[in-house]
Length: 261
Ligand SMILES: NC(=O)c1ccc[n+]([C@@H]2O[C@H](COP(=O)([O-])OP(=O)(O)OC[C@H]3O[C@@H](n4cnc5c(N)ncnc54)[C@H](OP(=O)(O)O)[C@@H]3O)[C@@H](O)[C@H]2O)c1
Image (cartoon, rainbow, N blue to C red; front, side, top):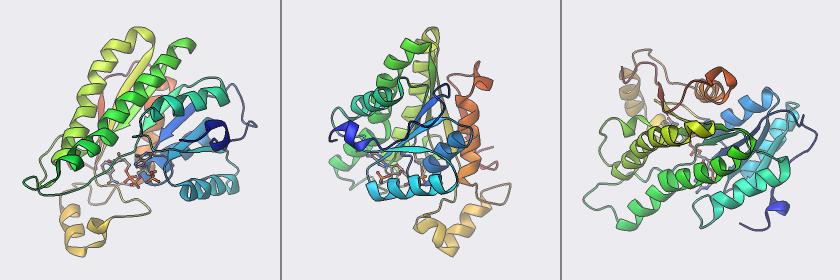
């Protein structure tokens, strides 16, 4: 990451009494909807992702809707990036109240032949960097009385699915990590929860959603009979980060139309 003061594009016009929210993986899909859900309620949001052009288009869309969205281009898996990102947010806004960690890589491959580097690098983005981001954030949150951290898991962390050993291991790790951090940080006022989305159709659906046969198979596994939307996840993320959830920590909220019921 280069100079954070140059890269953090934001506006100081937001109400400085409103919470400050960092969404890692916030440029598109579920993370984008979560950031916008907070921004619509007046929060000061910073969305982080690697691709600057997608972040710029998010900021433009937000501005067109009368919202303010700060953006920061960074690869959260790089050495020191979690601390640098958290520092940049706190330097700009003076505090950090909420973190949502939505960044992930899937890398579906047969487990007999998956290269070791794929497994290690994937675990780093999906789980290790989530921990390092939570750690850097919690160190700052204790200065202002606490905060909320929400990570985005997956049904893969709860159920077996061929070719997803790395992704499943990482998503399962988010659940057990949240339980540990919740217990350890509850006395500090920092809550930690996980949202597990089911089949969520994003603006950029992958091949699985486009293939009619796979699409029909997935729909058949959802008792409610339809895919979820990013907004279904965003509303839950907003709730978990809000004072309404002040007594909720260490929990995993599955939002899947009944698929795992
Ligand atoms: N969609 C679903 O059906 C579904 C189901 C279960 C769980 N989930 C989980 O929900 C989360 C969001 O999913 P999605 O479908 O919205 O994914 P997505 O559209 O691929 O968005 C992923 C976001 O993370 C960012 N990102 C990825 N690697 C990064 C890195 N190293 N550093 C910084 N940012 C990074 C991406 O931007 P750049 O590529 O520009 O960095 C993007 O903003 C993921 O954790 C996923 O595992 C999704």
